[in-house]
Length: 318
Image (cartoon, rainbow, N blue to C red; front, side, top):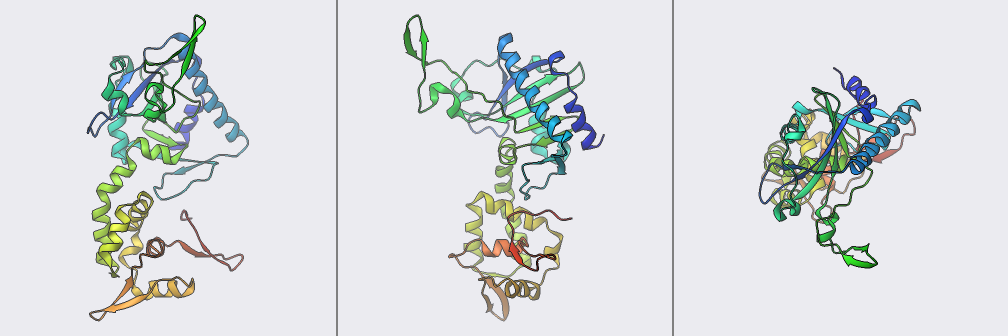
């Protein structure tokens, strides 16, 4: 089923008729995969989470009705506008497959949350599981920060009971009415890209791939001061994302120094070209650590309509 049709099935979920539960996801200690535990909730709290899902679905329905929402295929380096939702097939992103596979089917088989210290300290996300029937379910994910657990926060809460205020010491969690991404039938839909990427370890995967990406760039683009360039990239998440984009671009295999020099000249970029052992190279300058990355990521464009030249922070090929 195409992504658009799956998205429409999410909009048509009868949440009131569905069974709902909430699982907390925690990375305990050095574990690479999350541990999930289900909250034992009252009916009132269950209904509150149902309202959150209904509110999100209602908002999406309104945006669709007003033609204010666009679905786009996921692109790791693209910065979506507020009216865009990116989709990705779970099978294409192993980190998503791994995480979804940890949610028991049916989810009632998940262990109950027992507030163990290691689990609470590693809280990373929670997922609202909407069981539509015996075979169908939708998952709504929200990034979570352990600081929202009141007994661990730098803030402390006072609860009024029996005429007195007392400090809360038991694990007490703060939830809101937002959703970062949701999944159904093998597709994930991202509403808040940064949090979606954090939930599924996107940046950790980038760090793992950084060495290979840098090696590929180093082989195909001569850079004077490459060790310093590499060190700068490996210490910055946004630079790692750009590295990943650059390494995946087909033009990297064919781009020449002539192409690079032409772009440098056209956009008046502060990139020096030097010669080492008879080979022309781009000179890495620590005073402008971004300019070579932006050059290689093709961040400089000219407008056909206005004839003006631009530096862009995100783009999608049309």
